[in-house]
Image (cartoon, rainbow, N blue to C red; front, side, top):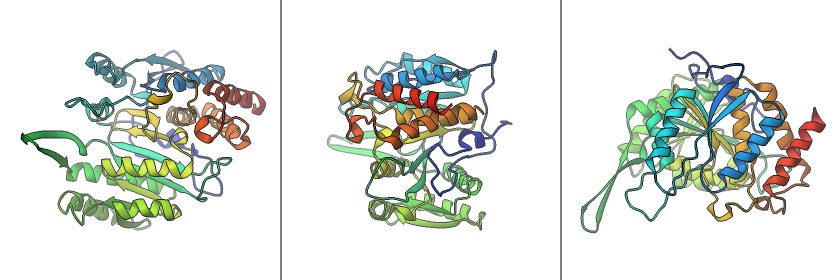
Length: 372
């Protein structure tokens, strides 16, 4: 029986709380890694594109704060599609139980190439993706008052990877939805809502067209909702949900979605609050937790230019610290990051600034020193 909770993973929201609720915690039986010699060993997968640069930012800030973590770095890449690095990553995560990960590139052109991001979640059954989308003080956007959590089923749906060409010019792609995995992600979503004083769970679907597959997902979430009478359950068709997200995002609280719709809505949500460089996230299984930016952008176009915003990976890393019970370190680092953003003097190009990744890292280090 797994022994711990992810309550401490997030215990205080990695998104600043401005007259709002704490946004955290999940299942009550998530495994907590063991500590060896006073330190945790954490798998680090920098990823492709900007991954190495933003991972260096995390390492520098963790070192400055004397965070008791030893990194086991695996330099796997999706560019060359080598299986060796992928298998090494899987074994490292199985051993360490916790990881920090950048995004791995998946080429569109090459047929038959599996996404290492998807394969990792399926191999390790990291079934729940949690993305936290909330306005950040100092980052002005069109909408205020956004505070929503996207909970995405990570291991099936259109991402099942079951495609074939039956005859020349005809391709069949299978979308797999199972009752078991729909119940599992539904329970996860309602438990999250209950433990974080959230009031509504919205299931996003396309059951008007995919009556069996999305119908099963929708019905399963609704049935689960009956077990949580203090939480309102409603549903919304995915195309309407996309429109509503950009016109009236304040209506949403917790959203639970199949895989593809979760990918779409998390990108919309990122655009609402300032872009993919700001959005933290994590992926949770029953034994393994992997923390990564909530909006899965590789950034190949700015690789090596020292322009990337490290905020998303830094905040994901503070979620990891809470998961390990290292709340003091998480507080110091997250407060410093938010102080830099609130002050507005150091802005990377994605936020219409001219500062570099290194500039942002130095500013965060200065804030940590000033605050503590």
